[in-house]
Image 1 (cartoon, helix red, strand yellow):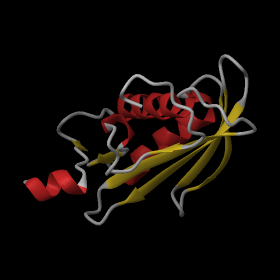
Image 2 (tube, one colour; image 1 turned 120 degrees about the vertical axis):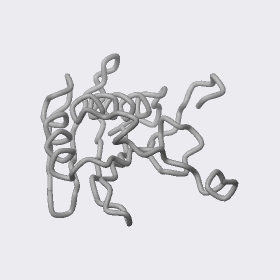
Image 3 (cartoon, helix red, strand yellow; image 1 turned 90 degrees about the vertical axis):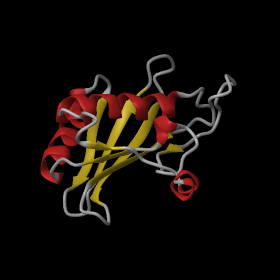
Length: 141
């Protein structure tokens, strides 16, 4: 949460309309294949404690297992890499702990870490990363 309280929700997911800017996912003006290969590399051990469980490039789905730092509790992270309605590469994630109802913000940190690494791997910049705007922001102007 952005108000300083400890987050206890078990699942976090990105959404272009998320109130938290860091959980809005990414829309890149970068080819799908480039983003897919980078995402696959990250989920396959490009980040420590991450291991690939499954992937399907036709569906644009990557599933990884991530082992926590403090409690060593595993979590499942699903990465969806698709083309949006404007043929831009869209990346969304969800992170769900396995076997624990207490998250302490770990799911949000996993998502942020993946996105930061993906941005670096694909050479994201203001020129090729489109800002996600909520429906309310888009209606304003």
